[in-house]
Length: 190
Image 1 (cartoon, helix red, strand yellow):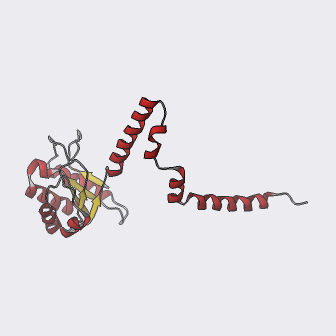
Image 2 (image 1 turned 90 degrees about the vertical axis):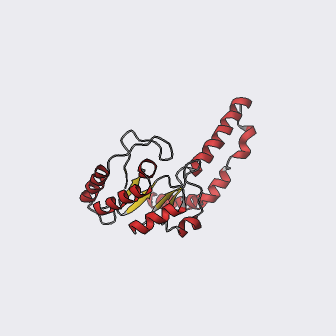
Image 3 (image 1 turned 180 degrees about the vertical axis):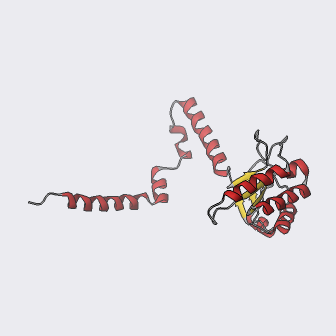
């Protein structure tokens, strides 16, 4: 579970004018989740947007307070330098998550660069979505312009490509085998 420290009127973590709750309120949020935890495999990820609002040291201090309250991992949002990830990792000694989203505050660090800064997890929350949106826009502009999708079919994944990737034909064969067995079992005996 991700619990963050922005106010209820949340903004994107890579946009200006974010507001965060007090450190005490964030600690209370984490403590409430930790106290309610009934499964030892349930993980609490404390996200902090404090870097942009209060600075690096305050964000690191807030992360430490969240760990004391029961958080298991830290998600420092909108990090701008690898050295900042290192500072978090060195201070908190728990897994750190990097949010690598295009067109944001965080540079598009490689997995190896992030690993060198002791980042344990990387999130690419919108990469495929942004690509799909760009393709969808081209498709619908083409349909609107030409009255058909014929001019943009080459942008699309074919049915065969999808089925090959998913192994769909093997799935159909398994269904056929299962249903054939069921049909044989259901036939009345004479």
